[in-house]
Amino acid sequence: MTELNCWKETKYSEDKKRWYYVNKESNISQWGTPTKEILPAGWEYYESRSGNKPFYFNVFQKYTQLNKPLESQKRPVPNGWKEMRSKQCNNVYYKNLSTNETQWAYPEIEQPSTRGMIEDEFPSTRGMIEEESEEEFPFPPPQPAKLRRDSANIIKAALRRKFAQKDYDAKLEATKTVEAALRRKFAQKDYNAKLEAAHTIQRAVQHRNDKLMKERDIQAKRKRIFGELKKSIEHDDKVKATRKFQAAVRRKLAETTYDDKMKEASTSEAASTIEAAVRRKLAKKDYDAKIGAASTLEAALRRKFAEQRRTVANDEEEDPYLSAEEEIVSDDDDGYVSSDPVLRERKYDEYGIGKNAVRVYDYDE
Image (tube, rainbow, N blue to C red; front, side):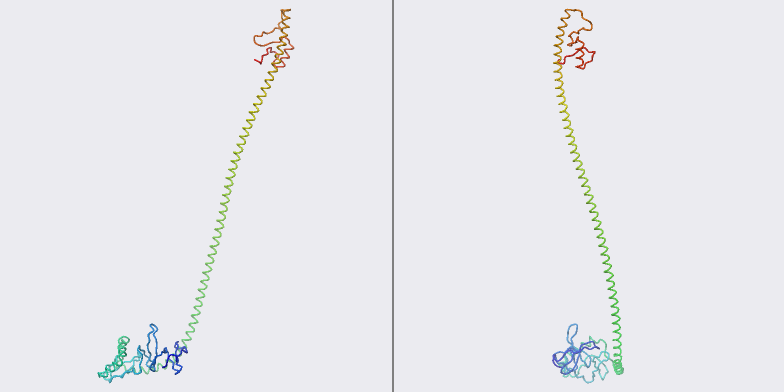
């Protein structure tokens, strides 16, 4: 083995589905990751996936170990013992040729010197084998009675491997064909499932959109109804306010009309009162004027009557006998009676007194 820079990861195995490494100098290929450590021929270095712990794999004997392999790792088998490998688990076990006993552990060497040398030289390997025999191999090693069957099984196993390789190739090809068919089938199923899922999602989205559209229509309808109700309420409020205002205006106009009527009535009453007063005043003036005229006329008549009396008195002295028609009423009742029929008729016509009346009263009193 050489240094790490001599190795490179070149190809990918289609059969094993793994990458392998090729040494540029020696053209040796291996599965394991190349390291800087120099290992004996037939050994490869690996790291575990779980804890990245290094371990070593023997490509010839098909077994692994944790310790680094050495050139002189193979220990000499003591006399009377034979190293053998189990076909069941591909692990080494030891057979005692004298007693035909088998065991997993390395046989003890009877020579103290040799034993001490081996223990000093291989202390870790022995402990590893003992530990593996206790933990990894709980079943006992093969017994002598099974050795013949093991040899027959070896031949059968070789034949099986030979035919198995052909069957493996055929099965691998069939497996690849079946796998491709399954992949196509699964791809078709996945495509159908994805298509169905897409259709389901599309239907769900369409249902959601329809639901949203219905909700929007309902909201728009509610908004329109609320707007109409609001407008109706506002219109009713405006009508009520207008009616209240009109009623208030009517009341105000009624009050104003009433006040105007009252003022007009009071004005009319005042005018009537003034007119009545004026009329009374004018009537009083007319009455006074008429009284004055009547008084003047009466005074003139009295003077005239007085003259007539005097004339009559003078005449009576001449004729003491008077006729019944010319009888003069005395002045005890403050009245007078004209003895002249013409003058008496004129006086009656002036004052509007009946013709049969003979008394005239003095209004000055």
